[in-house]
Amino acid sequence: MNFEQDTVVVTGGTRGIGRAITQAFLARGARVVATYRSNREAAEAFKAELDAAEAERLELACFDVADEAAVEAFWEDLDAREVEVGVLVNNSGVRDDHVMAMMPTAAWRRVLDTNLTGTFLMSKRAVLSMLRRRYGRIVSITSPAGQFGFQGQANYSASKAGQIAMTRSLSKEVAKRGITVNCVSPGFVETELLADLDPDLMKAHKQSVPMKRFGKPEEVAWAVMTLASRDASYVTGATLEVTGGL
Image 1 (cartoon, rainbow, N blue to C red):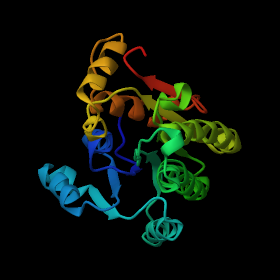
Image 2 (cartoon, rainbow, N blue to C red):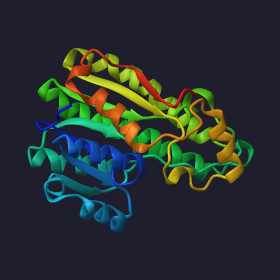
Image 3 (cartoon, one colour):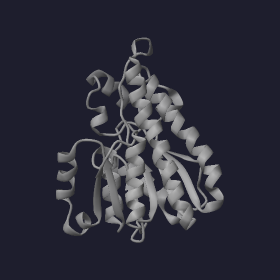
């Protein structure tokens, strides 16, 4: 997988799974624009840890993917600099767990706005850019929660199911233009998103995985790069599971 001719945008690309995705593309020659919402210190620390060649090819962009004006400004800046994006990875995501009967409306909206509306806004604008080249790859990070639904995660599960449905629709709209649109669905992966789970629940989740371990961010990054490669030209509207057999 060689991405030396590509510019890749990775939302939420400085921490967790997004960080691993950014690193994987950089290691294979891509120029990467990694977005983040607020933690500038963590983003700059991540860039400082890279070697000089990779750091030179990494650009950081701070904005909220749920903010339509900010998304538009981001893409307008890329257009003004004549940056042609070949790959978009929709990785930004949040959780705010509550049983549904006690879920604040603000928690519902926050998760749907970031996970689903953010994917919509970024993908919509990316497509307009990719159509000019008649080439592009869009990969969205979804979750088995979108298929199975998890207790206390009605908002998160709805957002992830929406990503899959949106991907299927969009893939049909742009298939003739050389643009593929797919999802990667990680299971339990060792990131900060799992850090606040109850230890007993963590143990139960691990036992539910046939491989009896949680995944690594690098294993998810491999799946993303596979779908983003030029060789994956006949794969679209699909969801690739990286779940350890869930």
